[in-house]
Length: 181
Image 1 (tube, rainbow, N blue to C red):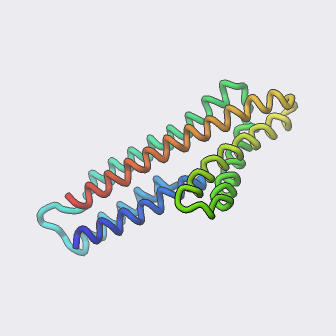
Image 2 (image 1 turned 60 degrees about the horizontal axis):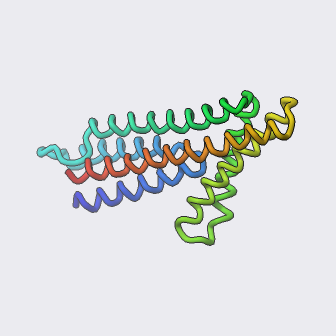
Image 3 (image 1 turned 90 degrees about the horizontal axis):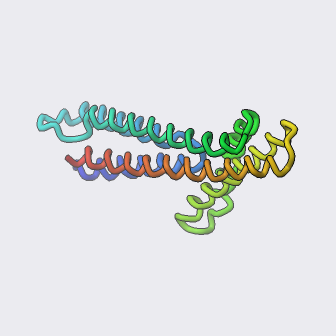
């Protein structure tokens, strides 16, 4: 029965991981889902042998989620900031990322599995570009300056989201290993 529960945990965590693509807190959902799993498993089965997800694994997942957030934030801020981005441009890049990720995922739905993932990544990058570009124009900069900052926001978003996705995938594996050992 432990393997059935571990598979269900993994499927729930994978769905949570996909939420990262549309700028939702997927890695934090993995932490919450796994913590609930640990609590329910201990309450229902009270394993005397220590099997199942323990609180040490949940703490490891918590630390990994923090690392994922730091990676995502630093990548976007550093690259766009080095290109002279303003706070207004960065704020609009975040808003653009959210809209772009969701639009990209929906536009690419006809392509099975990888379509929404790639669409959300590219849509988020395009949204970050558009938001940063508009923010810089609103701030009074030229279109060329906005494009320079927007390009940095695009690459920063792609790099940051990829890093966060990688950390989320590691979290899924950690939770699965903890569930079956």
